[in-house]
Image (cartoon, rainbow, N blue to C red; front, side, top):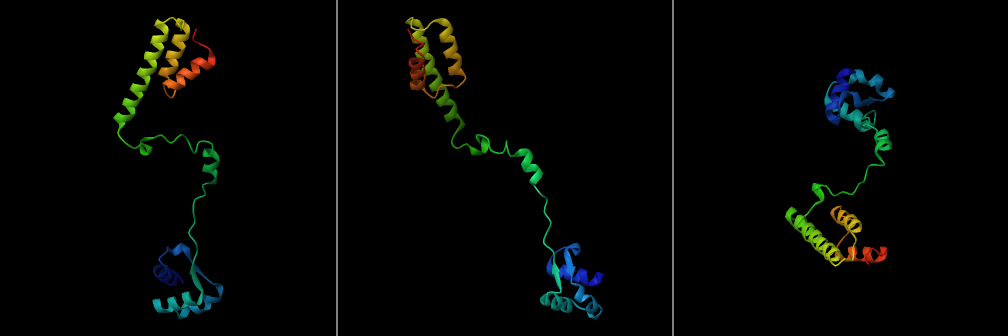
Length: 143
């Protein structure tokens, strides 16, 4: 029986542990000598391979389903030159800071408000200069 299983595993291309033999074929196993005999039993459906086992990811999914999808801004998602992103950021922040400083010099922003907005600009709160302007007008921060 072990030799038959080994030959069947060779033919089916699986491990010995995955070879299954039907109980009806047990009496015919004594006659099996060559691989052709085993092939015949496989064609008759008396010998077959069990499907492969897999590791269940169910427990992993329960643990990770909340964290699965993030913002996806990692290195693999980026296209183009890094310098372009950096330059764009610098230009954007400089223009907003220029605008804030002009408002402060003109006396339209008091120092605490200027400091708060300056920090928000540094933190990336505003998309661009027009966003900063609409925020100032909506919140009525300028005199």
